[in-house]
Image 1 (cartoon, rainbow, N blue to C red):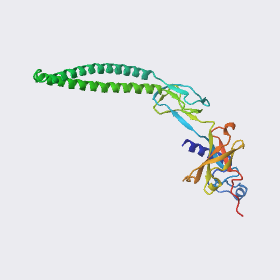
Image 2 (spheres, rainbow, N blue to C red):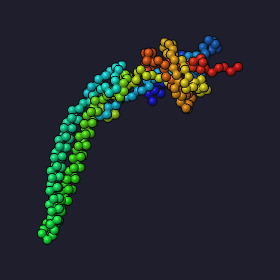
Image 3 (cartoon, rainbow, N blue to C red):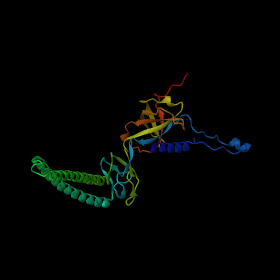
Image 4 (tube, rainbow, N blue to C red):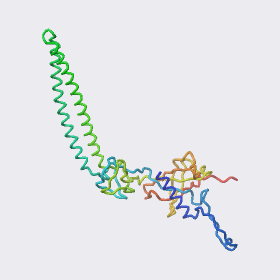
Length: 302
């Protein structure tokens, strides 16, 4: 969605720069004014002399989220900073979470100790019940045998309940430890910081974006082609990519062509890979023009 908005903005800006934007209906003019008025430019439906409108887009871009909600303690990067995969980029306040972890850890330890005590009691009751059963009713009263069995069963039930509680407490401790680790937000891949989306002291919800990270050294060209001109391009074709501002040109290779037209604009989106882009020093978001290289362009019919 971000790429589509950026493409739309570039289309509007480039069309305005070229005098190709749509105009409103003119008011009535006198004969002299009508004679002197320059022709009104129409919205382009065919490739201009410069080509088809496009924009440079990072191959990978992501709003790096906060896994845990809370207060942002620090943002360790700024716009334009290069980061490596796994590098910390921000931290969340951990005071409340550490307190909760300490309480959960203490509860888990107490529950574990209680479970161990109940296990000893259960095993002792099982031994007594087994001995009474083996001795038989001739030596041990029937009531004592039943009482031993009941105590063994109740001891086993109490131990099972305590073991379940201990397991739940330990699970909670593990969850808090994982959440505590997630309070340090790390870069998922190497790239550059394109935007800082929060400031220290700001409260954020789980999943809130912290920074926009892009692969600055890995760009592609997204461009749009009007209905009827898609045959000018095929996957694998070389194209000329011209920067709108400087008219500097580069070579690209068509890698993807959308299988359908946009229902509103009646245009097809295509993507091209820049050749030798690591040496070009280009930035994402730059407006460009794309056109087929001469040997790819269709030959006029005789």
